[in-house]
Length: 393
Length: 72
Image (cartoon, rainbow over the protein chains, first blue to last red):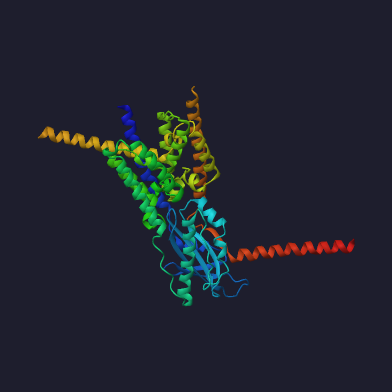
């Protein structure tokens, strides 16, 4: 009884914490684009808006008394990996790009650092508006690269059209073929899981589950790199996804996993489809190890940790701030040195205890525990209501 | 304490510390990021300033080298 009270208080209390973080984060964010654009260069002064996403400023003259040369600034927003990514371009009267800048982004800092480190931005300053360089996306961070390149082209074309009578910017491409393949693959895998848990296929379930785990690891993990994480959950909760993201596959994965959990009352995503879980289980089968003990203090520590991570990400309005799972590192080798160390530790640990990350610290497990609490509460409520109705009749 | 229990506790502690450090790093970056700030600016002026600075260093070293060779 006491445990139930503690669980109930914690569940409603965490909802309150999340709501508070979300509200405080909303008050903190001030989408003042003019202020951001004024900060691109100290040499550009008197920035005034010219129209939607267009500004005009003056380049500070070298000698006092001389008039400042006009500078045109345009911004464009493209869907990045974790939400909208805004870039700005400044162009002088000579049609040459002076500066390019990333104004705002919710993509993981490691991915952005990789893209900027490869010199994508450096290729644009100095080039003419009518002859922009063709820049390739950086492998492993394609969505962030495409958002930056597309945004710069769009912003440059916007200045060209408005100030120099050049053709209008082409409309952004909505969904790529790879994105459609990702969505189809996610749908197919979830359909397979539901089929597998049908009572009629009970005899072949064990083998089919192993097969599905292998397929999911190869398709979702290695090939498509689509796996939902705490950042997908934050993305869904914060509402950033409504302003556009480059890939909806991880979100679809999350929504389908929740639906399957509510329908079957089983966490089938973690048990069958999670590529990282499948890798851990595969390693564990080599040594035949058993699951680690899951004490209540371990469970509660990991839950509180996940709650703090989500709250911070909601407060900063940046889903990437909630990521501490090594999924990206495990399959794409992208992430910090700490995530690399974590991945190595999990791989070695999987040979000693079964699924150590899933059992001890995975926030997705905590999320399904949380969801299960509310689902059970709802089931109890309905049962009580039905019983009361029967007694009355 | 059993070996498996000890390994479990050690793994949990390592997960906690590594994940905590990873998150605190990210939050520090987010805290520093002001709403008015702009990240990753690439500018034409910055490149030309760097080039000019390099030229200055080259001239002074050349002059010194000439003087040295005349004296010698």
